[in-house]
Structure formats: C-alpha cells, structure tokens
Amino acid sequence: MDHNSQQAAHRSLSFRLIGLAAGMFAFGFLMVPLYDIFCEVTGIGGKFDTTAAIVENTVPVNDRTITVEFVASLNEYAPWEFRPAVASMEVQPGEVYDTTFFARNLTERDLVGQAVPDIAPGQAVKYFQKTECFCFTSQSFTAQESKDMPLTFIIDPDLPEHIDRLTLSYTFFVSKQVAQIAD
Image 1 (cartoon, one colour):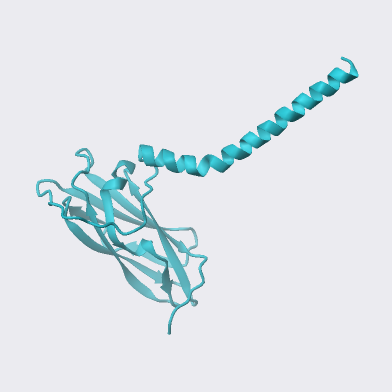
Image 2: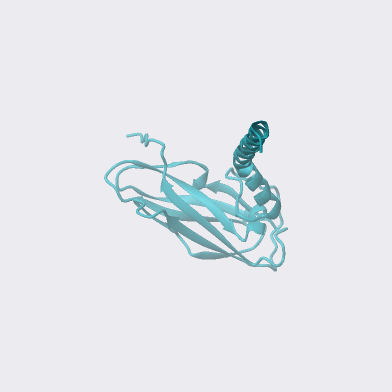
C-alpha cells in the first residue's frame, strides 16, 4: 500500500469515526423524548400527568369494583417517615374518592419533600385522574413536623374491563429546593 492510499484510508476511517461519534451523541440526545413517546404509545412506565384533572359529570358504574392499592417508598437513608393512610380501597369507576398519605420529617432541620407518582398497570394511567394531590407541588416541613397530605381521585368509567386492580405508588424524596417555611 503506497503512502497516498494509506492517507486516503486514514482520512476515510477518521470521517467514519467522527460520523459514528456524532450519531451516538444524537442518539443519546434523543433518548429521553423517544422514551417519552414510547411510554405514551405503549402505556409502559406508568407515566402520567402531574396536574389536577378536571372531572366532568361522570356516571358511577355501580356494578363494577376496582381495588386501588397505595404504596409509599423512600430512597435509601431518606429522612422521612412516609406511608399511605390505607393500604387499599375498593372503588367504583366514576366516583370521587379521598385519602391521605402521612409524612414526617425525621430531622432537626427544615426540609422540602417531593413525591413522584407511578401507577401500575401502565395501561391504566390515562384512566386514573387526580383532582387534588400532594404530588403536584413540593411539600415544606419544619424540623420533626408531620402532616397528612391529601389525595383526591376518580377512575374513569372507560377503564378496560380486564383491569380490576391498580397500584398507585409514590416515592418521596428530599427536594433540592430550599425550605422557605413561614413562621
């Protein structure tokens, strides 16, 4: 192989490697929006809107009962006590229900907490509508403060018939937001 053909081969390889690096960067950059689209289309991942739903006049489905289980979890070493008021509820689609989650700051300093919701099965996400939820905003706690945090929800009567059990889980963590608690 002569010198010119060797240079051409190196140049070709360099362009291919630069193109590969640019392609990997673009793929990494697009992963989050592509994942969101994938979850929305398939219902996988339990992602749902964290804004209050506007409930229009719905007619309760009296001959159908859905079990809603509530799960609370914390990151390892999280400085909270966090649990649902009830482990589960039997609900009828179309009816509005209220419950609470209890949280307590276990530290001697003010903290701000944030709850991140998830629902299973993923296909039920669009049928579970929260009209009030502590997860919509960050929660401020003074040292050792505890509180019951409200959750109001309704299950859309159009929930597929094969779904008779939902699990609503929240992970509660310390927010990076600085606690600004009024005296």
